[in-house]
Length: 97
Image: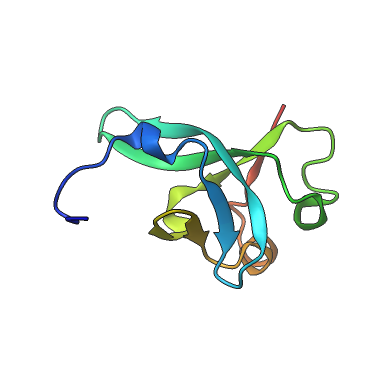
């Protein structure tokens, strides 16, 4: 596939998200957009790996992770190690009611 050809952002919906260590994180259900800059700023995940989000997203339907965590997009989406990110940042994934 030619990297220069823009992809429809809706093609991200439904893709599974894994950490760069191969741990399943969740599935993309929606996107957070910045309409002023016309960029994706976050991925709204559902079907979460409850072991990763235990105590952080209890009772939530999903989380929004910052798009800057994304390492690559292909058949699946790879993100930086979610456990390390959640321990070391103030801008953690946000629970979504």
